[in-house]
Image (cartoon, rainbow, N blue to C red; front, top):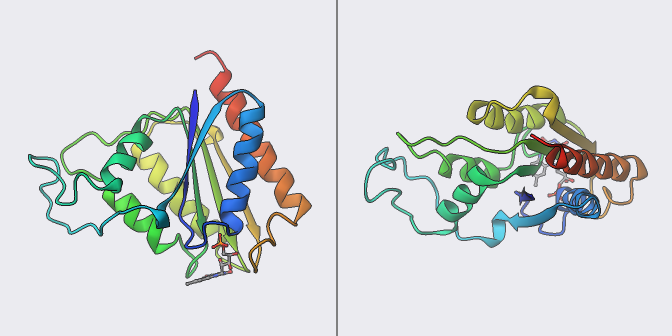
Length: 186
Ligand SMILES: Cc1cc2nc3c(=O)[nH]c(=O)nc-3n(C[C@H](O)[C@H](O)[C@H](O)COP(=O)(O)O)c2cc1C
């Protein structure tokens, strides 16, 4: 059983990434494998909207990191999606990745039995960003809403999130609950 975490901040060691690390560490303690991918460090071209991505030869960018990561996302047992709040929404980096996971005419369903969502803002837009992440998941899976766990919080400068005991606690709890869900007999 494995959780795949996708970090979409332009700061690989930023606040949303720190909360993901905390959640994954806790999930690992509870017996599940974890993987973390940082989108800014990947080669993921912009969706070019050619609309024939479901037919051969497929996405114009294939085989870049976007297509490989999309396949891993579809098949992961657990997924943890994180974004900083940018303009009261998900980061453009996350939006592009989501766009690249849409292969027209192909089943793009998520297999995940457990889902975690993380959003961090300096002030506002947390709910909207969590909604963006949740909408992505619910359009692609039949997972029940109570299995979608969310952590949203405020943090301005890098390091602020992991210095906030309440947020750290919430991230730990999310990691533990995701692991427990994955270990539950299906
Ligand atoms: C382009 C951009 C847009 C942002 N938009 C918002 C916003 O709408 N609301 C807000 O409260 N913070 C906003 N922020 C602040 C970030 O959400 C905040 O600094 C967060 O801690 C960054 O997380 P990270 O370290 O994971 O990148 C914005 C930051 C950037 C760079």
